Amino acid sequence: MSLSKDQVRKLRRAIQENVRVQLDTESIEYVDVAHNVIDAAAKQNHAIFARRGCGKTLLLHSSRKETAEGVAVVYLNCEVFKQHSFPNVLIEILRSLFSEIRSHATGWFGRSKKIRDSVDDILSKLDAIQAEQDQVEEDIRQLESTSATDGVNLNAAIGGDQVKISAGAQSSQVRRDEIEKTYKLYRDKLQKLELWLPKLKRDIAEFLSSSSRAKIIFIQVDDLYHLRRTDQAFVVDYLHRLCKDSPIYFKIATLRHASVLFVDRQGQPIGAQERHDYQAINIDYTFSDFDRTENQNWKILKNFGQRADLSEDQLWSLFKGEGFSRLVMAGGGVPRDVLSLFLEILSETDIEAGSQIGKDEVRALSKKNWERRIEELKHDAQDDEQGALLRAIYLIRTFCLSKKVNVFLVSEKEMQENDVWRAVIHRLLDYRIIHNCATALTHKSGNPGSYSAYSIDIGSYAFMRKLQDKFTEIDFKASNAKDRMRSAPILSPGDIDTMARDLPKNPEAALFDEPRE
Image (cartoon, rainbow, N blue to C red; front, side):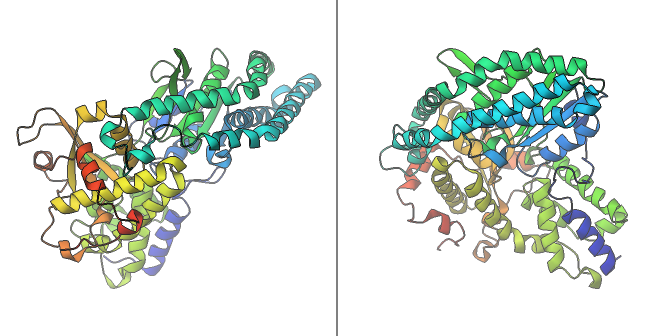
């Protein structure tokens, strides 16, 4: 049953208008299969973890509609002030909080001039402090730039002349040094905000106790990973102390492995700890349970189909064979990637004439998806890591192409012991370059220890005609998928160091080349 031109247009429009969520717009319903909306709407501190495109922002907005009576919500997106120093980020958070209180002054507090004047005084003081920050910011940045080359970093550990990824434990000390340096640089700037915090907490408690409508405030902090990694724990620490024993709860949404929510500074905990200070909500879906991931993505597409007045059978008629499974695989299981790729393939397929989306149609456009992910990584990655991650992608892709298989194994022991290796794998997972397929596997060769399985993104190889019939692609839907992964090649930090000797001058450009015979 082929769809009409109008039906296809209606479906496209429904997806286009909702594939990226914006604040204060009518968005698609969050497809909730694990009570995530109810959890996020609860009076509890939360951190929502998932890769980009999995629905973190949509969950925040959907939970806002489910909050109990008397709960007000303040939303901030960290991408807006990702270049700010962390004291100025704190000021933005406080300004958003008190601006929300001020905007509802009449509704919440009636004609109380005292409260309105108090809030106005706080906002004026925040403006004054921020102006002071701007005057010294240039000096701080200059000091940071002169020390940027000190020590060992991720950039040097992959493809560097002297430091290798197999010596990755050194990276941890450098990161601690950077965090310590950041704290010292900003200590004087923070003093006013620190000394002011107890009074701010008392003021907020007094304001809300006087309110006839708002008794509790949720502070939603979206995309925390956009802030500098050395600043993140300090921002979270201030936010946590602002909320502690106050009628305020934080809701942070971020990439798990690109975020630092807690550090230890000279024996003093900074930030917030999972399970102790907040509850985690993981909304990611991976290839480790491909059926569940595929089912979640189908429910989301079906939701859009309902908006376009299409039945489930009509939606299924758009696909043939393994078409939808292949679409989910090409999208890395990430709903926004799956939907975006679906729209592109829909444009290239003559649905009205009865053509359908199959694995070949997905394969033809998967390279564009791969190219977009590389660009997103360049946009989102920290400056001191971008080059290292691009080199790592080239080396891992080269390894998979040389072994002619889409899955590789990594020793879980090496992941635990090598900070740099763990950071590389985790960053590439967050940026959807590689995908999690399984954990706690044993290797059929008899090698001791347990292994995690990862797949290189389909877009990195599917466009290569030379690989046809020469490349082993493990089907994650197959009942024997996990067993086949146990025979996959093992990739170690030593392998990366060895291959790095032959790095091309421009690894990024080589990511889109076909290998030589």
